[in-house]
Amino acid sequence: MLPDELLREIQKYIEGEALYIPKGKVRKKWGEVSGGRIFFLQRNEEIRSKFFHKVSIENLAEEYNLSYETIRKIVYK
Image (cartoon, rainbow, N blue to C red):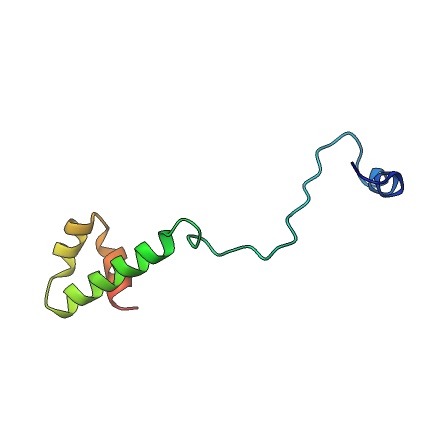
């Protein structure tokens, strides 16, 4: 699949091994394709809103199945 000249040049550095050639395109950030990024942004905004409306961190942690520290990081960010 590769031109002979390029193959010989590559064999100077590696032979008989797998070679990974990354895509030339710019990679998308985590969650952009699956929608995970938007889901977590919306969830975190909902958590901040509830905290602003006097829902305790303990109650938010229980409701969202997250640790107290995780909720604290979200609301004070």
